[in-house]
Image 1 (cartoon, rainbow, N blue to C red):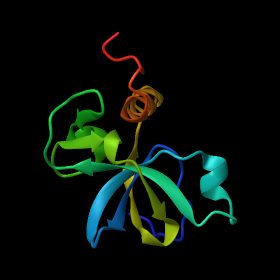
Image 2 (cartoon, rainbow, N blue to C red):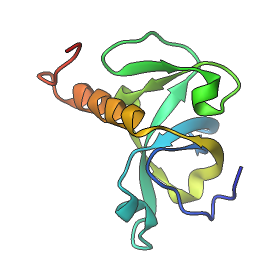
Image 3 (cartoon, rainbow, N blue to C red):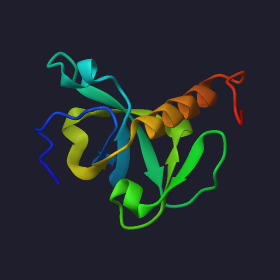
Image 4 (tube, rainbow, N blue to C red):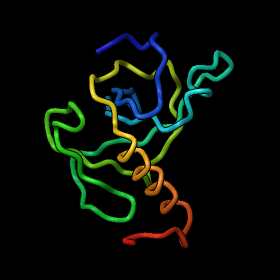
Length: 118
């Protein structure tokens, strides 16, 4: 893992200090925002250990994430995280296809008319 002083980029998986605990998250904010010195935060979607696949949740295997166990991306828990709370980057990055799917999940979390299952 790299130091938190390294700039985060869209699609990267990081450990972050959120809610008093260490959680894995995927950075979803645009690189222009993440790399800007004017911005002190990033937009991220957390992983959870438990869950079920659904419109806003997707199971990813360890080989896809670099995490020790299968984990669930939970787009309905999208959050702003201070860059200073980013603890270290994992070696894996989500693919473009996975990022498109994640953005669609975020859309479904905030738009009741967003398509699902098409």
